[in-house]
Image 1: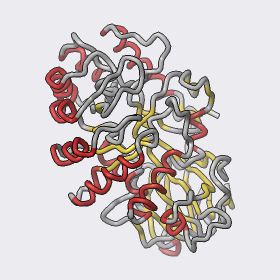
Image 2 (image 1 turned 45 degrees about the horizontal axis):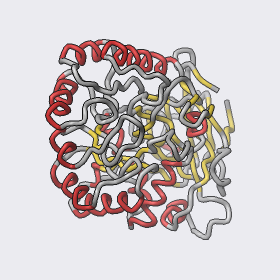
Image 3 (image 1 turned 90 degrees about the vertical axis):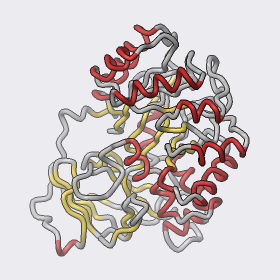
Length: 397
């Protein structure tokens, strides 16, 4: 079900009996706390239950020893209209992703829109429409930051100023439209940055008709804020070019589910050797030809941890705090003042692991038991993940 954030209020939420709390922050991924208090959708206190003011709670959730983490962020999606995608002629893909723990999505361009306008007036109108629509319409409560115009030749600085004034804060993937060269891309990235619009560049081989190869030289010259799907979407660049990009800029390194998994692990290794894991963020790049992946972010976390030799609590940061900080979002971290977006998880039933973190290190997916967005419970046990061993419940409302 879609939700209108303007009419829903959360009141006071208390989550107690938390077995493990993941912060989303690389510098301190695990918090020594067993309870969270949120008021009107924002975190007001974190700590031990006996030390917190829990009186007057409108909703009390007993986590029953399960893990609480920030809601997951999908840094790379391609929405079109509502909760429908023409790419796979599928309904409810956003709400289904919420059942995979995703509470926030970032559009990399509404490029699958049938008959997508490529003239400057039309592309600006499409971006503004998408920005307005997904501000007002939230499938499953998911916050989708949309309205990401795909830049075309002939745009001038005033176009970016107009978009920013209208509320647009993102650019679609550079390379999916007519701009595929470094000098033009860099000029438009600078205009976008000047007016507070964040940019992402397509990386690798073409993904849809109209897109093209974007290699290291174009990526480095454009200097976009996010190196979109550095592991390819789907086709990755050669390893030497990936390494050159990692070393040649300090921008975000986005790893996606619909990309080359070996190249994702290679990028992760380079980032770790450079001691710059804070640059790694995760997306799905869906919907795509390979479909919709409601568990795509969880699968990336598990894959990077189990095959990339990364602690599970660190891998969860790639899908939460890293993205939040890079994208300048007020979610993604469990800290006072942040938005109360949470996913409550546990190891899947019959997992050979001893804990949720151990299960992820073994390559298993966790079971999602509850998703909370803006302090409001949006779902109970997930219909998409394997069943969790321990499941939270609402004990008072």
